[in-house]
Image 1: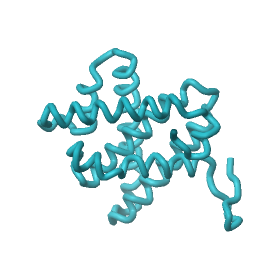
Image 2 (image 1 turned 45 degrees about the vertical axis):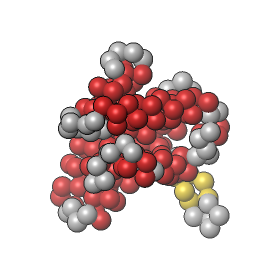
Image 3 (image 1 turned 180 degrees about the vertical axis):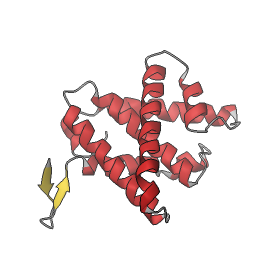
Length: 167
């Protein structure tokens, strides 16, 4: 579903919420205090983390189409980012496919971890830090921040989420 923005252009539904996901993922604290590598991969890992947490929150709502809309914004963003990095047309689709698959894997891992299936810190170490050695104090900080973000998502009413507002 699309709606006009203030300029009259058609804007994909899910755009405001996806922009908020990226804003949270780009918070410098993740890269300074949380020691997430400030690289293309590290920034992708952060967007995938925040988007996965949002999609987990949205599973409680009758929000299948809106979840699809936000995910489509992620796909369009990843496609555009790869093109800006100079990745050519023949491989962009394949790379985006890998990124969507990685998002799906993280979604499952974080869903399980938040439901108590595995330790959240293990999922973070594997997916956010890609298995690299990370100081336990840093991992504690990241886990605390992820849980705080989950609490904020849980406390935000669905209509506000759709508008890109996270309490």
